[in-house]
Length: 235
Image (cartoon, rainbow, N blue to C red):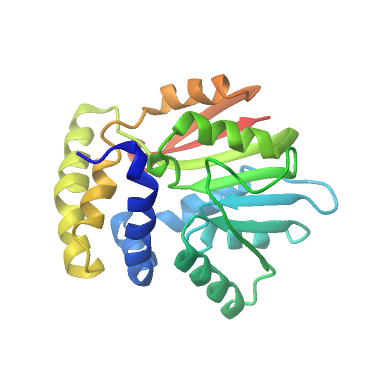
């Protein structure tokens, strides 16, 4: 079995392969709900001030970054990703949509290329299951956000209700890889993505880990019948 040591290289290679169908697969896997969840993530930042600086970490093709820019026109949004082809896709989408998002950076969530207390807020969507060291990633987020700033993390979680949990597991572990093979053209990638949830902390445990990482407060709300969790924390 592959170790955590080679996880960054494997994740980088996998996301490089699926860039072209990434948006389509997100819409299909979430039954079209992922855009609404990303917009909610942006709203939860509750930004004020003349020119807040916001880091969208693991931006992918840039949907959360673009949502932030729409909701907070005065914000300066920096979109960062570990995978250069994803970053290039985000840049292209931003230009095509006339978005004010113009700052892009390639960076590792475990060692962010930013000074302490650089940002007023930070977001990420579907990042946390893919890092090799979750505690370290949370501490890096805490480090680069100013005291009083907010962090919003959108991530899949395991539903609590027994009946829906069984349906979710059937869909996520059995159906999603088939969709990934037929539509995404990469069954391996869309087998990894469900499996990455297997040992991932449940929402309540992730909240505790955020507090252990240094956040003053943390809460979460469940979405998608309990299959999605949006964690909001304050530095």
